[in-house]
Length: 425
Image (cartoon, rainbow, N blue to C red; front, side):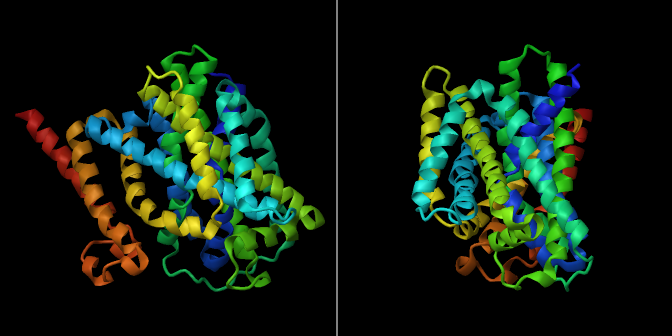
C-alpha cells in the first residue's frame, strides 16, 4: 500500500498541475457578480472544475495508460483524433494563457518589458523543467505547491476575517449553469486527461509498484487534490462576493484579483501575488507540455527525439500565442471549449463507471450523440457568426448552453437497454 507521504506529494503535484491561470483569475469575478448566490455558483463551478476533473484522475487510475485509452472503445481512429485535438488545444490555449497571465500580473507591474520577452523567458524555463522529466513530481509536490497553497490561504482567510458578510445583488441570471460554464474556462476536465497521464508516467519512473498499489495511490491523491481545489475555489468565489462594495462593476478579472490581494496582503501584495501567479501558471504549463511530449513519445517509440522535439514545439507555440492579452485568449478559447468539453466529460464518466454499463456500443452511442448535440452550443458561442437563438430552442437546456446533457443521458439509457436485449438473445 502507498504510504501517506507519497499520497500527499502526489496530491500536491496534481493540485499544482490543475491550478493554473484560469483557476486563479476566474473564481473571484464569478463571486463578485453572483452576490448572495455565490454558493450556487460555487457548486456549479465545482461540478465542471473539480468533480469532473477528479473523476478523470480516477479514470486514469483505472486505465493506467494514456489519453488514447479514454476513447478506444469508440474506435482507435476516433481516439487518436481526439487525443491530438486535446493536445493541440492545450498547447494553443491554456498553456500560452499561463504566460499571458504571468506577464500581466507578475511582470508588467514591475518591469517595462514586452509580452514577447516575458513569453520567451517563461517558456525557456518551462522547457528546462520539462526535459528534467524524472524529477518533475518531486519538484511540484514538495516545493512549488505548498507555496501556492500558503499564499492562497493567506488571501482568502484575511478577506474572510476582515470583511463584513454583506452581498450585492446578483448580476447572474442562471447561477448554477453559469458556474458550470465558467468552470469550462479552467480547462480542468481537459487537464485531467492530460496531467493524469503525466502522473502515471511519473509514478512509473519512480517505482515498481503493482497496478493495484498505483491505482490506490492515484485514487487517494485525486480525492485529496479535489477537496483542496474545492476549498480554494469556494474561498475565492466567496472572497469575490464579499468584495462587491469595494470595486467598480466593470472591473476585469485581473484587476479584481489584484485589488483583493492588495486589501488582504497590504503593501507586500504585489510581491506575494507575483509569486502566486508565477508558480500557479508555471506548474500548469509544465504539465501540459510534459503531457503532450509523453503522448507523442508513446505514439512514436522508434523516434528517440520525439519527446524533445514535441517539448520544443510546445514551448515555441506558447511563446507565439502567450504574447496576446488574457482577455483575448479567453474569448478565442470559448467556442473550442463548447465543443470539446462535453465530449471530454462524457469520456471521463464512461471510463469511471462499471464496465457492465460501458460497453463499446454504449461508448459509440453516447459519444456520437454528444458530438451532434454539442454542435449547436458551439455554433451559439461564435458571437456575430452564431445562428439565431430560436433555431435551437427546441433542445432542452439549450438556453443554458448545455443542450448535449439530456440527449447524452438518453443515449446512455437506450444503448444500455439495447445491449442487455442483444446479450439476452
